[in-house]
Amino acid sequence: MFEKLQAMPADAILKLIAEYASDGRADKIDLGVGVYRDESGATPVLQTVKKAERFLLETQDSKSYLGSGGSPAFNAAITDLIFGAGASNNPRITTLQTPGGSGSLRVAAGVVKRASPDAVILAGEPTWANHVPLLSSAGIDMQTFPFYDGKSHRIDFDRMLSAVEQAPAGSVLLLHGCCHNPTGMDLSDEQWRAMTDVVVRRSVVPFIDIAYQGFATGLDEDAYGVRHMLEVVPEMIVSGSCSKNFALYRDRVGSLSFVARDEATAQVLRSQANNIVRTMYSMPPDHGAATVSHILADPALRQEWQRELDGMRQRLGDMRALLGAALRDKAPAADFSHIERANGMFCFLGVTPEQVKKLKSDFGVYMVGSSRINVAGITSGNVGHLADSIAAVI
Ligand code: LMR
Image (tube, rainbow, N blue to C red):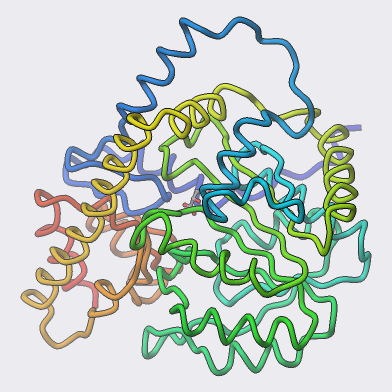
């Protein structure tokens, strides 16, 4: 039976990790996958994670099963982190722990498919490379709306808004909460409010993927869109992730929240999601989520974690400024000012796919084919080589 199968093409981002690893050049630079790196190029385990893990090692007294929705303590803590303090008491919100943001997105898509089999999910152009394959694997039709103007390196908000104005009622609108992947260009608070008005008027259901909370401006500021919509819209889906802000990438910690019209509907949504989880992976892994719950529940540890997060955000801003200055020096005729306007880990460098290939083959500089760069891969030691390489190919 298996001989009929054809090999699948490798995932572009994961393939890039392998290519980079096997490149022997000493001056190679990894601007590919979205993981934080420090000045030495490492992706360290956070100190607060280490402390919480030590606590768990000493005190955890059982590894018995939890339910399909994971740990109630984690779910309450992450609900408060995303939606604001006290949100876990809001009966309209129900949250399940999921295996990363990806697990959350996939379960959410399953619930959407059951609720409205013909519903379409609208995703911005561009969006995270895995959004479309991941969500459409639940059998949902995906369509795109214009998001980014590659010429001006800005959000094309008017076209985005008018696309949502045209969306059929009951469509699901996928938005990035902050630190847009791949462009790093986020809606302003004013744009969130304008989008919310259209969403309500057109009876569109917002689905916010917030995978980088704390990487743009701060934990509360970055959640503005989610929190504003919570006040105004009748229904919403929110996928959260602790991969980046707790650096728990491989431990797979995420959350799926539904905001329903009322408590009874929230509970129905919860039971539907639980049922989907039970038939896919039964329940999420515990260790990373238990680590996060402990950090968030312990005031001193929580403060220390926020300082670690602030440090990561600060470094990303510093590296943007460093590359911006180096390019003004090495490629004065080109405008790369968008690198410093973008938020979080990513921005679109704005070079062609051929130039991306040349950067890899001739200079050992790795980035996704769209020319999305992860600014965490920049260091004060490699920025010169990076700017020289970019100047050489453009
Ligand atoms: C990225 O976009 O690089 C990350 O979110 C990792 C991934 O799974 O694609």
